Image 1 (cartoon, helix red, strand yellow):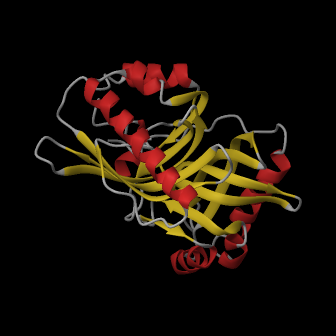
Image 2: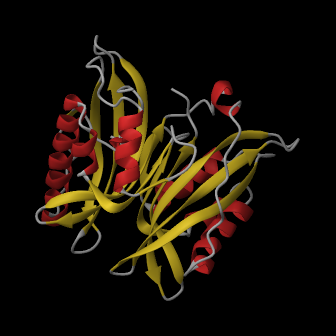
Length: 301
């Protein structure tokens, strides 16, 4: 239905949004252009949403785009599948909801790759927010407009995963074992082994101006030192992380997309949260470093 977390980018998703607010103050010329491009993308997404046009939505994604959103149990691969998803969920079948998205980060990381991150609200006909979340997307610039490379977005979960969502069995897709699986798994393993005991080691996985977009935090965090502080303050004794990778894609200019799943277990070994993650990495001689991480639990709406 139209009020599903649509891919916003919804993946506003990743999204976009029905109406967007002005992006935060960005000083560099390149970043200003990125903010303007994302604003244009949001406008197009909003128009397709308002028209209930799944084909128009699909045209906002690259042919081989990836959607990693909290309302889906597994990643969605390719424009055709994305269009089918929108259509099968009666996307735009009514006009009872709108989407409002804000952009907090917008920047070029290569000549044609743009990263963006921010928040979204899905509003009912009375203008009341019924769903809120975070998005962190990767776009490719083509012919003056952005197309979605990877959408990664999800509902807020500052109070943890809902009981209703947790009652749905987690689906685990095949584990990735292709090119540069070792580089991707190095990040995953470091996260698993140090998530609670050594947050500093996890923070060092990020570049200095890395972006951390985690549903449980309820906000977009920018900068390694701020990420370090958040990881340290959010560590919970007795909770263990199990994570794995579903895919990895080199998108050129020493940039790569990586994505996968995870769960959190309490001291008794019971799963208390599960979901998916989608990252954008910088490929270096010493391994991959995280430019942007987006993760959050599965969510029924």
